[in-house]
Amino acid sequence: MPSQNLLVIMSDEHNPKVTGYEGHPVAETPNLDRLAARGTRFDAAYTTSPVCIPARAGFACGKYIHQIGFWDNADAYDGTVKSWHHELRARGHRVVSIGKLHFRLPGEDHGFSEEQIPMHIIEGKGDLMGLVRDDLPRRGGAKKMAAMAGPGESPYTFYDKEICSRAQVWLREEGPKDDGKPWVLFVSFVAPHFPLTAPPEHFYRFWNRDLGIPKLYAREERPHHPYVEDYRNSFCYDDYFDSPEQVKRALAGYLGLVRYVDENIGKVLAALEEAGLMANTRVMYTSDHGDNLGSRGLWGKSTMYEEIARVPLIIAGPGIPEGKRVATPVSHVDAYPFILESAGVPFASAKDTHPGHDLAKIATGFEPDRTVLSEYHGMGSTTGAFMIRVGRYKYVHYAKYPAQLFDLASDPEETKDLAPDPSHARIVAECKAKLLAICDPQEVDRRAKARQAELLAANGGREAVIARGDLGFTPAPGFAADFQ
Image (cartoon, rainbow, N blue to C red; front, side, top):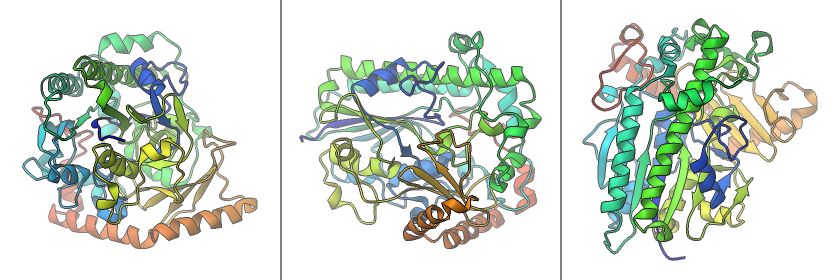
């Protein structure tokens, strides 16, 4: 297959179930629906970590978090581990990013030829409160999230508009230039990440509709696993999402932001086509992770349910089957070989200890003999969490809490934890053995917490980082931070 240009589009916190092509009853994603129709979508794609900074580090490096560090939202990628950006730039390719990166600092060499309007973590420090992993503090970000849900504009909607504009300009002016090698353009939006403030024309598409109540939202229906309780009690969403109207405003805001990011994606894809580049450019769409979106009384990220750990993933363009759905579990680690191979760089030349496989090969029928992993070591948790897919089963292992097991074939909404059932003990044991073949959860948990203790001490200790406050979300470039 001849080498291709590649347009990688990433959103932030896009619950994979909230798309038209997945059959959501209300969501409107016409541009993503068309992209899925002319390409291949992966129905079991997973993030390397269900929170922004580790997820983006894993996507950049093509490795799992326990392989690279960058454990949480205060420990961002700094360019010291080689990324696909580094690999391609070293071989003479233009590798340009526009928008959110969430790396450590501007001025570091993250491997891109150019970073346009990048969003990096605040002060090179990020969410210091997440370094506290025991006796979890009550966070204030949920108050901001609830208060800002509704129609209007936010720093993030303004930022996404600028990202969209710059991407269109680049594709029309830089994309057609022939440098002798394919280029990769990484366009990274922030929607539908909270604040759940959606442009009015999109918010009101959903406000006057029946949005229902999120799954297992009633208190008596919610799961009471200790990991979930830790998260719920630290983020305290029930203090602010305390009425049906407030829940609806949040849902309408999120759905509006999904429609907004889809609109911006449509503009970028139109620019690609109008620049005459569609025939020799592959396109990838994904998100760094999903959002609980009220299910089980939870909002935000940080859990291993399908709404969060699974991600939308579509590839399209030359050599990619059209209108295909792939059930084989895949991961963001598979983006690394796909990106290199698309640009004509053999993955074997850079494989090292990368666990990924080329998504284009998987799209045409290849089934890797491996287990897909997602892991979490951050805010709102007192223990490392490790999720794997083993056939129809999802197994979630915690370093200090009981494991969970879900049968996604018979229970795709994950309403029944099978791990306590003695009849599933053999399945639990088999899944645990597969996880242990990848990593030692106890050792990884200790290593993550040791790094966090080091960073916590360097920033004045527990009381100092709690006094600094909960950032809620990273400020867009040009906007001041607002701690709660």
